[in-house]
Image (cartoon, rainbow, N blue to C red; front, side, top):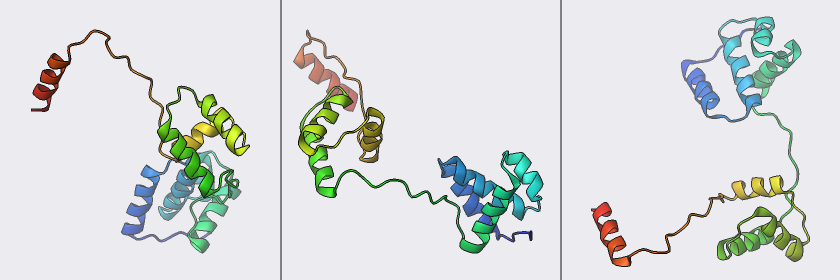
Amino acid sequence: MKSINLTTKEKIDLEALHDTSRDGRVRDRIKAVLLRSEGWSTTIIAQALRLHETTIYKHIDDYVSKNKLAPENGGSQPYFSQAKTDDVVAHILQNIYRYAYEIIEYIWKIHKIRFSISGFNKWTHQHNFSYKYPTGVPHKFDEEKQAVFISIMIN
Protein backbone atom coordinates (compact mmCIF):
# COMPACT_ATOMS: atom_id res chain seq x y z
CA MET A 1 0.00 0.00 0.00
CA LYS A 2 1.25 3.45 -0.91
CA SER A 3 2.07 6.10 1.62
CA ILE A 4 -0.41 8.90 2.23
CA ASN A 5 0.85 12.42 1.61
CA LEU A 6 -0.90 14.89 3.89
CA THR A 7 -0.25 18.60 4.01
CA THR A 8 0.57 20.22 7.33
CA LYS A 9 -2.90 21.76 7.43
CA GLU A 10 -4.55 18.35 6.82
CA LYS A 11 -2.52 16.82 9.65
CA ILE A 12 -3.45 19.66 12.01
CA ASP A 13 -7.13 19.33 11.02
CA LEU A 14 -7.07 15.56 11.55
CA GLU A 15 -5.38 15.93 14.93
CA ALA A 16 -7.95 18.55 15.99
CA LEU A 17 -10.75 16.24 14.87
CA HIS A 18 -9.12 13.40 16.82
CA ASP A 19 -9.04 15.55 19.96
CA THR A 20 -12.70 16.53 19.69
CA SER A 21 -14.19 13.23 18.53
CA ARG A 22 -15.96 11.14 21.16
CA ASP A 23 -16.28 8.06 18.94
CA GLY A 24 -13.34 5.69 19.41
CA ARG A 25 -13.87 4.21 15.95
CA VAL A 26 -13.40 7.61 14.32
CA ARG A 27 -10.30 8.25 16.43
CA ASP A 28 -8.85 4.87 15.34
CA ARG A 29 -9.45 5.74 11.69
CA ILE A 30 -7.74 9.11 12.15
CA LYS A 31 -4.78 7.49 13.92
CA ALA A 32 -4.42 4.92 11.13
CA VAL A 33 -4.35 7.66 8.47
CA LEU A 34 -1.92 9.85 10.42
CA LEU A 35 0.44 6.98 11.22
CA ARG A 36 0.39 5.79 7.60
CA SER A 37 1.23 9.32 6.46
CA GLU A 38 4.23 9.21 8.81
CA GLY A 39 5.52 6.08 7.08
CA TRP A 40 4.33 3.39 9.50
CA SER A 41 3.56 0.01 7.96
CA THR A 42 0.03 -1.33 8.18
CA THR A 43 1.27 -4.26 10.26
CA ILE A 44 2.78 -1.95 12.88
CA ILE A 45 -0.30 0.31 12.86
CA ALA A 46 -2.51 -2.75 13.40
CA GLN A 47 -0.38 -3.84 16.35
CA ALA A 48 -0.34 -0.35 17.85
CA LEU A 49 -4.10 0.12 17.55
CA ARG A 50 -4.93 -3.51 18.39
CA LEU A 51 -6.96 -3.88 15.19
CA HIS A 52 -6.78 -6.43 12.39
CA GLU A 53 -4.51 -5.51 9.51
CA THR A 54 -7.35 -5.75 6.98
CA THR A 55 -9.27 -3.20 9.06
CA ILE A 56 -6.32 -0.81 8.78
CA TYR A 57 -6.23 -1.34 5.00
CA LYS A 58 -9.96 -0.59 4.83
CA HIS A 59 -9.65 2.56 6.97
CA ILE A 60 -6.80 3.92 4.87
CA ASP A 61 -8.50 3.02 1.59
CA ASP A 62 -11.76 4.67 2.77
CA TYR A 63 -9.87 7.86 3.58
CA VAL A 64 -7.89 7.93 0.33
CA SER A 65 -10.81 7.08 -1.98
CA LYS A 66 -13.79 8.70 -0.20
CA ASN A 67 -12.23 10.96 2.45
CA LYS A 68 -14.27 8.91 4.93
CA LEU A 69 -13.49 8.89 8.64
CA ALA A 70 -16.83 8.02 10.25
CA PRO A 71 -18.42 4.57 10.13
CA GLU A 72 -21.76 4.50 8.34
CA ASN A 73 -23.88 2.33 10.56
CA GLY A 74 -27.01 4.28 9.83
CA GLY A 75 -28.67 3.92 13.21
CA SER A 76 -32.39 3.45 13.65
CA GLN A 77 -35.37 5.52 12.62
CA PRO A 78 -36.66 7.95 15.27
CA TYR A 79 -39.82 6.98 17.16
CA PHE A 80 -41.21 10.50 17.18
CA SER A 81 -42.32 12.75 14.39
CA GLN A 82 -41.35 16.39 14.81
CA ALA A 83 -44.88 17.22 16.03
CA LYS A 84 -44.75 14.52 18.73
CA THR A 85 -41.26 15.65 19.76
CA ASP A 86 -42.46 19.25 20.07
CA ASP A 87 -45.43 18.09 22.14
CA VAL A 88 -43.28 16.09 24.58
CA VAL A 89 -40.69 18.88 24.88
CA ALA A 90 -43.44 21.43 25.61
CA HIS A 91 -45.00 19.10 28.18
CA ILE A 92 -41.67 18.52 29.96
CA LEU A 93 -41.02 22.27 30.05
CA GLN A 94 -44.43 22.91 31.63
CA ASN A 95 -44.39 20.06 34.16
CA ILE A 96 -41.81 19.04 36.71
CA TYR A 97 -41.01 15.35 37.01
CA ARG A 98 -38.74 13.67 39.51
CA TYR A 99 -38.26 10.40 37.64
CA ALA A 100 -37.80 9.43 34.00
CA TYR A 101 -40.36 6.62 34.26
CA GLU A 102 -43.09 9.21 34.97
CA ILE A 103 -42.42 10.93 31.65
CA ILE A 104 -42.19 7.54 29.93
CA GLU A 105 -45.67 6.72 31.27
CA TYR A 106 -46.99 10.06 29.97
CA ILE A 107 -45.54 9.32 26.50
CA TRP A 108 -47.13 5.85 26.55
CA LYS A 109 -50.55 7.26 27.50
CA ILE A 110 -50.53 10.05 24.93
CA HIS A 111 -48.50 8.70 22.00
CA LYS A 112 -48.51 4.91 22.57
CA ILE A 113 -44.73 4.77 22.24
CA ARG A 114 -42.75 2.76 24.80
CA PHE A 115 -39.28 3.96 25.84
CA SER A 116 -36.76 2.18 28.02
CA ILE A 117 -35.29 4.37 30.74
CA SER A 118 -31.86 4.37 29.10
CA GLY A 119 -33.41 5.13 25.70
CA PHE A 120 -35.40 7.99 27.17
CA ASN A 121 -32.32 9.36 28.94
CA LYS A 122 -30.53 9.37 25.59
CA TRP A 123 -33.49 11.17 24.01
CA THR A 124 -33.46 13.83 26.75
CA HIS A 125 -29.74 14.47 26.26
CA GLN A 126 -30.26 14.80 22.49
CA HIS A 127 -32.86 17.48 23.22
CA ASN A 128 -30.63 19.36 25.71
CA PHE A 129 -32.39 18.32 28.89
CA SER A 130 -30.41 17.41 31.98
CA TYR A 131 -31.37 15.99 35.33
CA LYS A 132 -30.50 17.88 38.45
CA TYR A 133 -31.18 16.68 41.95
CA PRO A 134 -33.66 18.94 43.70
CA THR A 135 -32.10 21.19 46.30
CA GLY A 136 -33.79 21.97 49.53
CA VAL A 137 -34.79 25.45 50.62
CA PRO A 138 -34.44 26.32 54.28
CA HIS A 139 -37.86 26.60 55.87
CA LYS A 140 -36.76 29.34 58.26
CA PHE A 141 -35.10 32.18 56.43
CA ASP A 142 -35.43 35.94 56.49
CA GLU A 143 -36.30 37.34 53.05
CA GLU A 144 -34.81 40.75 53.83
CA LYS A 145 -31.46 39.30 54.93
CA GLN A 146 -31.47 37.08 51.87
CA ALA A 147 -32.07 40.07 49.55
CA VAL A 148 -29.24 42.03 51.24
CA PHE A 149 -26.87 39.07 50.90
CA ILE A 150 -27.72 38.64 47.21
CA SER A 151 -27.20 42.35 46.52
CA ILE A 152 -23.78 42.18 48.26
CA MET A 153 -22.77 39.11 46.24
CA ILE A 154 -23.80 40.70 42.93
CA ASN A 155 -21.93 43.94 43.57
